[in-house]
Length: 116
View 1 (cartoon, rainbow, N blue to C red):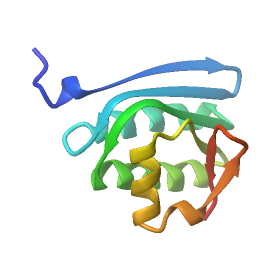
View 2 (view 1 turned 180 degrees about the vertical axis):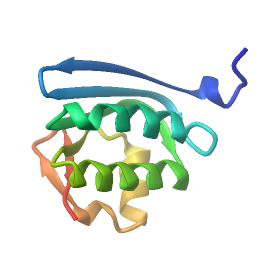
View 3 (view 1 turned 90 degrees about the vertical axis):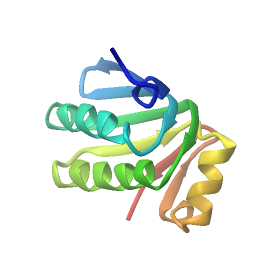
């Protein structure tokens, strides 16, 4: 039986060749951020590009933000690109407040790609 915290976040993964699309749903917060971290790390060795689609992500806290940074580091070490698309207002504001938005590269109207 899942507790209320784990029920607040879900993800779907679609792989197309060396590209993996991870659709995030709910709230990426403490207690569930390891779910995203573990699943994406499994994808890194076989992927050249991982796209995190945040269309349905309603909220993210500092643990979720830290997870994105850790995944970026892991992907970069493996020669993989990590991209964020479809950022909601709250997620974009959090990235802006933490001065991480300036670290990201715009991907047209759809999102941003991490570049440190």
